[in-house]
Length: 136
Image (cartoon, rainbow, N blue to C red; front, side, top):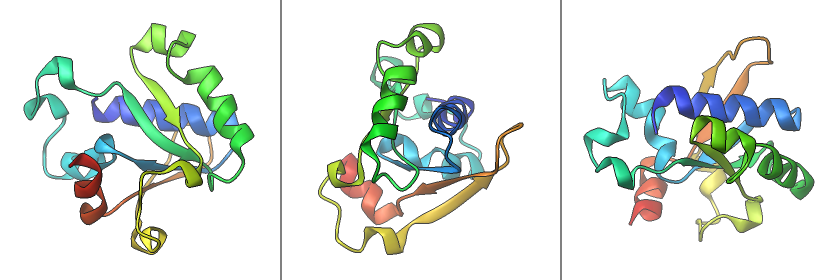
């Protein structure tokens, strides 16, 4: 996944669910920080067929599973969005997150970006310790 695809999915998720932010986790969560290091594409590290097409996220605070279902049906796997862009959102409720330490929310890092006509969305991404646990 490329950074513009990351933002496309995050922006679309916010628009579909009418929320101001998504919580991004999983292997693609590190993309904004790789971009700051001059790395624009995960394909520099892994083969193209192994690049993840999904963005794992929680919609808003992740507690309203109806929003996750709405996003999944609208821009999730096998949706028209997926067929058109070749990428998709993979929403999960907070309770469905991998075996995250109980203090994971205190270690969130924020990445802010104003996205066109939508409200400023806050993309919160787990810190390196949590990302390493996910990737391993």
